[in-house]
Length: 235
Length: 119
Image 1 (tube, rainbow over the protein chains, first blue to last red):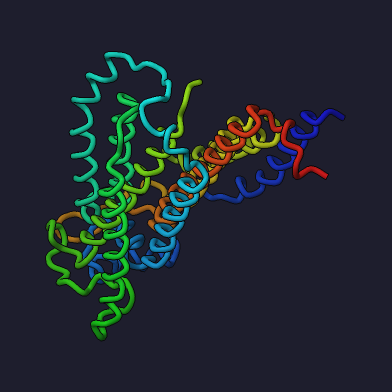
Image 2 (image 1 turned 30 degrees about the vertical axis):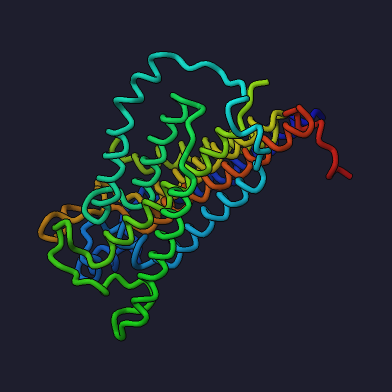
């Protein structure tokens, strides 16, 4: 039997195996008990309107810390693997030419994209959004800069400083929750006043953590993009 | 249609996951294998979101007074998928970096040219 035929048979077997799962799914009649707890007590306990943000940043804050660590690991491994010789880095690479449309439109779009990213990450506890989403949008703006001008040089000093400072600030906020007694422990958001739900300065430390998360994710993704672009060479 | 929204989205997720797995196993080009992996991850994420769906539910975001507006979908799978998307992005970026390094080494993207780990 050919290899492709075997793969097709395997996929049919997987589909047959998944079909009972599909049949037993009742279309969602009620929310899980854990979700019910978060929906009923989330605003009272964390002060954040956006329940998903309160889960990601406060209830499961430790997982988010691990996630940020994985992203940092990815950025470090990529910069280790694709490290390039100094003389390849600068002007003597040949690259594909960029159209006029892209260069001109990027000048108009990049400030708007970065502003939208900052808005998304600052309002993460009120509206859909948060640190990861805002950081990803900011990195999209950086990607557009690179597409329009492949020889653009990122300022690595600033990137590394912003990345390290926001990462350390995230951990410091978590430790502050332990140091302040009966405030809920590591990564608690009650180190600041919970305030009135619905206002920009509410939900305790969630907006602060979101800003640091967004800066860290944004700079890390920009760093990865920068390494990819710098190691590009159309010989 | 509204009544079967959960089932439709679940079916789309399963189909995407199977298509991605097929691409992962049948393609020879390294970039296409990574694309298959990416489609597979997307399918699994859609399945997770579909499982948290509640009929007629809206996004789990309270109104200005902190009261629930109608029925909410389950927020836990959504938070889980948010994590999963970021990890998927990291894994994809890492695999692409490996492929760039492999290509610099052997100038080939065909997986059959890499037999170093084959026994």
